[in-house]
Length: 300
Ligand code: AHG
Ligand code: MN
Ligand code: MN
Image: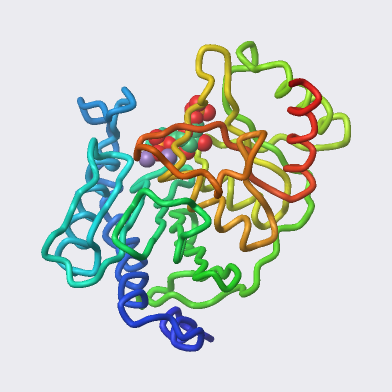
């Protein structure tokens, strides 16, 4: 079977990028081991006013320390940090954007959560999603799975007991499926979003929503459909963050033939102003993205 190293070699991945991807992927092992000792919520909030889970903080500090020691990364933008972390002693100019632990409300109930990563060249974390050099996520489910793109399509690896990632699927294509999930309380949905959900339900779409974007995205990647975290009354920007959550997963979607939008525009074309920028998110199969954009137009 092809290992992660062999895949990166075969695809002529630059040396430092290869080291960086492998280094981050290996952190799934200590992060998984930290679950037992970090089951509870911490008594701190992040800059979004969300209570941090102990594992949010642990994974954040752990990955930042590993990246700092590697000297491969000049800048890190993390969902759990108030500011961009600069590493002047770095010898490479990669920038990493990350959600160290996505789906953290599911830690205590042992449902699937993950780590989301985007990698840029040119030392800046505030770039458009379409300019990502690589995007990846590790999923801590029954298996530890790595989904990766280095701009050459999407592949999925699984971690074996020897700590090696083995290629399970290459050239992953997101099908036109009928699964959907949506965040936001129903009474707060805007009219166009309610209409979209009504239409796709009438056309046979089936609800699947866990509360972990990365896990919900993974099943959309495999089976097709759409994941939504919409604008809602009083929160016109929704909940999810453009830089750490929407862009890396949207880039993977696009590499697999899917798409990402805020309802009006391709999110990968949006230049972030600040690391903490929020955005409504619709990500999934091409046909679903066309449909929500048509409905938003009808209602505008
Ligand atoms: P995080 O754990 O990084 O704070 O992200 C949580 C996000 C996302 O993973 C998930 O889809 C969504 O918030 C769930 O929100 P609701 O509980 O409002 O559905
Ligand atoms: Mn998240
Ligand atoms: Mn998070």
